[in-house]
Image (cartoon, rainbow, N blue to C red; front, side, top):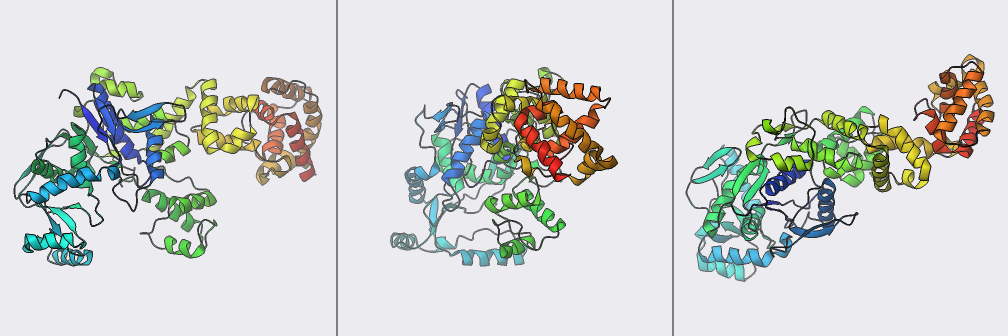
Length: 556
């Protein structure tokens, strides 16, 4: 085709799922390799569940990942980078603003006898579904509405009687030629008369997507295999409307390592298991009342909304499994690692790109992406492998870049660190935690020792016994002597502090462990912290001395 146009069309009913991000990435790569356009469309016709907050969240996530849309809602990210616009004048890109267009084509189908109004109430249809199940037959709409004379249907519609509009599906075979799966044939009568406009006046997904793909010039539809069942409906509608049929490519699904589809239910299940393992009978957080907690705990079909689930997980000390792009960003993963990793879920580089290549950027993906390299089998999302990718990327990052990017992350997700640890102290802390962290969140956890008030340090009992009070307070005696040496240090940077501590240890014929560990317990409450010189430099002399004094007073 002369000009390739792909589209990603999420519904703003939640955060961007990592599977949706992979679809967007593949659409972007395919369009860019073909010198075409990548379009972002917001399918917000589900008025009850769609949200402007989720719409903005999708734009933020896409921009963060670096999946830049050529056409779509105009958006400027936090760094001033602009996305989207309307170079071909196919706006608006939100389906809720395109109702007049849909109604024009719907009226045309009705006038041509290819669609019709149906008046059944939901409970009537449900009764028919149950009857079909009882007969062990698949349910298909029985076209009862067509038994009503056309003029009577028109009068009832004009009178405002609630109704839906159904597509009169032709009794013929539908052939879908898929670029990944090959030919998919659906026999005559297998596609029933599905709804194309709901009772609320909004089009269904099936109708609006067909109209938009035609009017927006979409040439290739890349999407997950869960949509394959819908494609014959779309092809039938395209035929009825005289539209061209884009090329389809249905990609494998993404499962977790247990073989279940990745979904927000995973997070709910993890929290429920943790609550039961902890033996809880009442809610540990004010975000969730006891009655609601009890119902949720004992009913696997119930799911908590994020505003209740996340405080519950925090109270349980639980890291919820990441499912959405927002989850991974908050957990401190790098966007380039996410795009690298999800590109490998169902696609692999060709041999000519190099042997066993796993680490690459979006530019590499664009250069080598081809539909022929997409597999048919479902993919497994290996979080351990993703974490290893992220750990390697951080390890390879220069200190100054890590400090800059970690500070940006802290400003959004760990504001106490960003506001309380500044200047040289932050730079020192960043260089100290980088070699030992796997994510930005991991780095933040390592740096939280610096936030406590000097008299509010929580001491680990085993660390205190082993390093301070054992052998009749041997560690406490070292700590008292060490306080004077620390008070006399002039320049209080990591190198100067480390040199002074080594000199102190050498002068008393002590191993550095006998000096550093009592000091580390006094400053952080445990034996785990960044290197001791950096730990003191981050705290500064005054806070270091105050914490030593507080520790000595607490364990005198």
